[in-house]
Structures are given as structure tokens and as C-alpha cells.
Length: 167
Image (cartoon, rainbow, N blue to C red):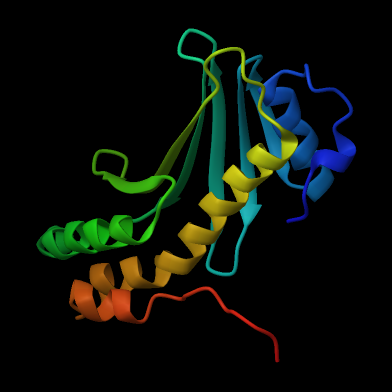
């Protein structure tokens, strides 16, 4: 995902308008659910991720939620929760959680824009890119813990890491 500042012309634009422009630029399927909310589908290597961003003027917060289905057997839930804790120790912005009633894995992040701060296209693009990258990187570990006979430690050891350098 490239930096998005080059196609946003105004610094006074609504944060969800910026998200819509980014989604259009990347040719992602999206639906503007309300003036303050947008939902997108972003195709990954492992699956399609549902990403929703919502703006709350009362809290000066742009909230991102990235979800994907995960329906682990009940006896694997302790291992999944252990893997979630280990995953969250590896990330700086955002966190994973599991919503048992919806059977969904969730990445959550909130960008605080208090004090009349304005979100840049680059910040929002980074939020979306980071959610996608974390979900892609850790999806295999969550699957191994949920459906394999893997411990949380072993699954996290093989979680895809970021590549450095060049070939």
C-alpha cells in the first residue's frame, strides 16, 4: 500500500472521506455505512479481511476494527487466548481480541485526534496497512493453535515475521 497523501487534496477533509479515497485508490470493495462509518473488504493471502473505520466526534477518535472468522473448538480456547496475549506483546499499535459470540478474531486500534488534530491520509493508510499486515502475519499462528495440535509458543514461533533486506 503506497502512501496516500498524494491523492488527498485538503487537510480539512472528514476522516471517513479520506478512508473512502484510500479504498477507491486501492480498488477495495467498500460501503459507506453512514457519514461517520465505512466498511471495506481487503483481500489477503490467507483470507479476505473485513475492515471498518468509524469516526466519533465526541471522543475525537477514529476507530479501526479488522475482523475475520475464527470458530475454534471450545477445548482450544485457552491456547487461543494464550496466543492472543503473546501476539499482543509483539505489537505496538493496536491489539487482537476474540469476540466469542460472533466467533470472530478482531484487531482494534483507535487514532486519537484530540485538540483539533487532523488525520492525514498517510496516518489512515498506515492504520489500515498495519491492521492488514498484523492479521496476515498472525493468522497462521491462530489457525495452528485453534485447529492444529500446536501450543501457543510453537505457533507464535512460526508466525510470519517481517522480511528485512533484499534478495
